[in-house]
Structure formats: structure tokens, C-alpha cells
Amino acid sequence: MTRTTLRAGLTTALLTVATSLSAQQVDTSRIAELERRMEALSREIERLGLGRDVVEADTSILGLGPAASKVYKLSQGVSIGGYGEILYENFADERQDGSASGGRNVADALRAIVYFGYKFDDRILFNSEIEIEHADEAYLEFAYVDYSLTDRVGVRAGLLLAPLGLVNELHEPPAFLDTKRSVTESRIIPTTWRENGIGLFGTGDDFAWRVYVMNSLSGAGFNASGLRGGRQKGSQALAESLGLAGRLDYVGTPGLMIGASGFRGSTGQARELGGQEVEGPLTIWDLHADYEARGFDLRALVAGARVGDADRLNQLNGLAGANGIGEEMLGWYVEGGYDVLSRTGAGARLLPFVRYEKVNTQSAVATGYTVDPATELSVLSLGMAWKPIPQVVAKLAYQVHDNAASTAVNQWNVQLGWLF
Picture 1 (spheres, rainbow, N blue to C red):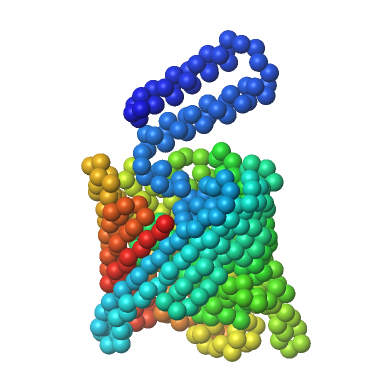
Picture 2: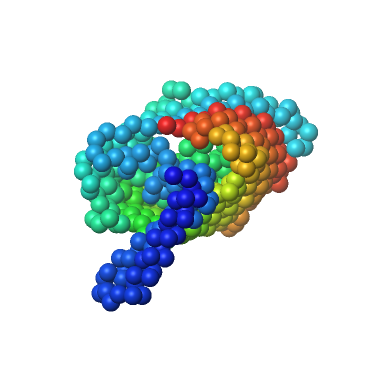
């Protein structure tokens, strides 16, 4: 059956149902059910009109990437998937100020991942990600059990990915354009960020949401560069301080996702200074949008953080001067690409792209501390992504780095990525 024929059939079905509703007396529950089916048919017509790009994007389930979502599509049994990436970085010989960069080119087998899941029945499943980084470092990226309370609401417990930003949950290389993850989603949203916890998740026709209670970050790892060192990664994680992470996304239009997420928790983890416990309250927030349809691949994100007790955390961490933790942090980026093959009917995709980002992990500092100008950074990335098939991507990008200290170094990146 052709797409045109199927669309005509779906339209006829909608008209038939509408006529039936107007001609018959039916109870309220029956009307609601028919309206739900009409809405589903309408969405299918729209999906067919948007084509292949949206179908690929929709393979993501509950915020996870296509490979990580495989277990949800089983009726029962074992699921195996994975992804990986190899990255080559070629650094300029000079910094912005003309001094020698000292950069050495690097070829890195950055990540090789195996997703392993098991679906016990319609209500209970296990999902996990086992990661090898830099060819010889092994990590458990996530491992959790889902229990479905209803068709649309469930409980999740285990080692969880914090539901913030665009990349922390969905970080498979074919799922984003650039060769490297953004600085904002590395230093402020410390991707990949996972902690032990429990929470609820849910989906509706137009919205998806997740709320988790997790062990909080540890302020002992914070510094002038941001929050990344505070991740505990589920390894004997201190849980004296807990945190609440949440997310709400609008997903009612095929190919479009708009949402917000946030985290609130103390990071002192019962450490004391002068006989008094240091709370180190932390707030992280972000607003994000992603659109992938009709050949376009567009996304934008703004994220910020506020660290309380920054001066006391600095003292505990032995940080002084320009090395202190920022009391406030802010970063944002916009990214766009277009598949120049989208109208040719080719199976491959070729996407020239651009990403511009600004981030400052010391937007404000505690009294008595100074700002390191190198923490105020912008990055312009110009590149090309080629997907011979949806699961494999080769990328080339040139990144222009600029910071207020004039010490940034430009670089070329080449990436090979895959998922299955």
C-alpha cells in the first residue's frame, strides 16, 4: 500500500468515525475512546507526511537513545544493543595570543558500549549500559528496573541517568550532529551524569516526564571549571545529601520536543568546616528544544547553576584566588544542520552543520575570590555529518575556541560513530 493510499484510507476512517458520532447516541466513555482513536489516526497522517526522519527520531523511548530503548520493544526476553565512537583531535600549534599551544594530536577509542536488558513481562524490565572508555576503562553507566503501574506511569529504581539536558540521556553519536558533546552539557550539566536513586516516569499524548530522588553530587569535586568532578557515578556514593531531579517535555508534535529540567540538592555530604556542617546547596536548570523533520536537525539549550556556600566549599577543597568554584554558572548553545540529500530519496544523509556556544562557569564568584578569564569561553563549530545508514555516522568539524584569557586553542575533529 502506498503512502498516498494509506493517508486517504486514514482520512476516510476519520470522516466515518466523525459521522458515526454525530448520527448515534453513545455514552460518554465511548465518545472519549473514539476521540482518542481519531487523535491517534491524525498523528499517523502527520507522521507519514513528515517521513523517514521522524520515524527514526521516534525510536527513542522515555528519553533514551534508539539502542538503549530496544528492551522496551520486546514482549519478553533478552535485549542486546550498543554504540561506540572513535575520535581524532588535531590541535592548532598556537593559542589565541600567538604563544605555542603545546597541544598534541590524539586518536582515542573513546567509547564502546553494550546495552543489556531483560523484559520479564508486560510490567517489569531491567535495562543497563556497560561502557569501556579510552579502550581500557570500564564503567557501569546505568542499571535500573522499571515497574509499570499503568500503561503510562511507572516506577524506576537503580543507577539512573539524571534526566537533564539534551545529551545526558540520549548520547549515542548518530543522535547528535557535532563531533563532541557541548561544553555546557559537560561542565554545568555534568554529562554523562548518573547516580543511584528511585523515581517515577510517565508519558501522555502530548507530554513526557520523569522525577527522581537521587544521591546528590559531591561538592568535593567542584572547581573553577564547573560541576563535572562532583559526579559520584554510583560507586560507593555518599548519600548523606540527596537531590531531586525532574523533567517535563512537550512531545505532541512529531519531530519536535520542547522542555525544561532541573535538579536541587545539597552537596556538602556531611563535611564540616569549623565544627559546622557545610550544606553546599546546588540548583541546576535548563530549557531545551529539539526538532528533527523535513531534513532539518535543529536544537538549542540554555543551562545555569547556582552553588550556595561556595566560599566554604572552596576552603574545604583548598581552592583560592581564581581557582574558586563559581557561585553562578551559565551556558547556552544553538545547533543546526540540514540533510542536503533529503529530497533525493537516497537512503544516506549528508548534513552540513553549525553550532555556536557560550559558557561561563564563573559568572559570579564568592567574596574574596577572583575570576579566571579562561572560564568564559565560546566555541564555534563548523562541520559535516554523513550517515550512509541511520545507525552509522562519520563526522568532520573545525572548532574555533575563544576565551577571555586569549589562551584557547582551535582544533579539527574527526569522529566515527555507530549504534545497533
